[in-house]
Structure formats: structure tokens, C-alpha cells
Image (cartoon, rainbow over all chains, first blue to last red):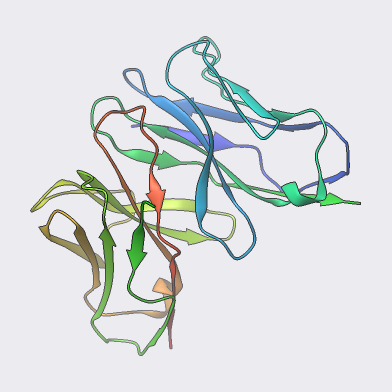
Length: 112
Length: 113
């Protein structure tokens, strides 16, 4: 079945550091890929998405590229801020069923 | 503003009680989901529904059932609550095309004592 695997956290960085959170997936068909973010005390919200191979999603300085050959969708940001501290979830949505599957989540803590 | 509303933010129930968690969306979405969120385990899918009265088991359906009598409402039922069902429960909804995002409720923190 479909699955998503994320790098384990927590990830602790200093402000302005470079961020990478790894995400790989297993899926049949042609899923869409998403990154969701959960800020402390809040619900999940969409950060970015990519719907086909080689698409790049971007938002708020974050980027991720849909790599079909490596079945990956790694999240990157060039310079993190304290306000980026949150839990980040990689997810895929099946093209066959519409089923939405999440990874384990990665906690990011950014220190001033 | 699109909205997914869960009926309670916090619930405390006793072991063995039947518990109902309600979720309502106002976007006319076909698909609705129930997840539980536990530290280190991420979001695990309990059940999802792709139409009224239609449902499919997720990864951890044991001890749960669901009901979808109307398109906008998706209920999660704990038939006999147990302490290992203490968790954060999240409801989400989305439309059919695979490239559309899901919208989430604020979550229900359930404690079973």
C-alpha cells in the first residue's frame, strides 16, 4: 500500500541556518505530494504541494521538488527563522482513491 | 472562509463509555477523514469516507466505527473507550481530484480515564 517516511526529529537549528527535512514515499499510480505544517497550539495547514513529477512547490521561502526517480519530496529552506518552529508533515494523496496518507512528522526547533 | 469544525476541543470519558466525535465541513467536499495524532507516530488514518454512507478502513480501524449519513458530517465512534485511545483526533475533508489540499479541524483532545 501507499506509505510516507520522514526523517526523524527533532531537528534543532540556529536562526538563518539551512533546513532540509527528508521525505520519501511508496505509491501506486501518480499521487500528489504535500507538506503540511502545524504551529504550536494550531491545526494543520497546507505549506506547499506538487502534483506531478519534477514540479516544485514553494511557499514562505520553503521549497520541495517532486522526484519520481527517487520517490522523494524533500523540504528545504535557505534561512530559517524562529517563527518556523513547528511540526512538519509530508503527505501523499492517491490518484486512485483520494486517500490521504501522512508521514510521522518532524519537529523543527529554531533557536535565536 | 472554508471551515472544518469538530464538536469538542477537549473531552474526558470513562473506560467502557461509548464516545461520539463529530465533524462538520461547509465546503461540499466528497472525502472526509479521521486521524489520530500521537507523538512520534504522526497522523494515522482511522477511517475515511468518499461519499455519503460509504467508508473505508484506514490503517488503525480497530475499536472505532464511523457514520456518514449526510455529506457534510462525519462521525467517529468509539464503541467502548479504552485508555489506549487517549489521543488527539483530527478530522479533515477534501475534494476528489488528487491535487487538491485537505482542510483540517482544530482537533479533539480525548482523555479516557
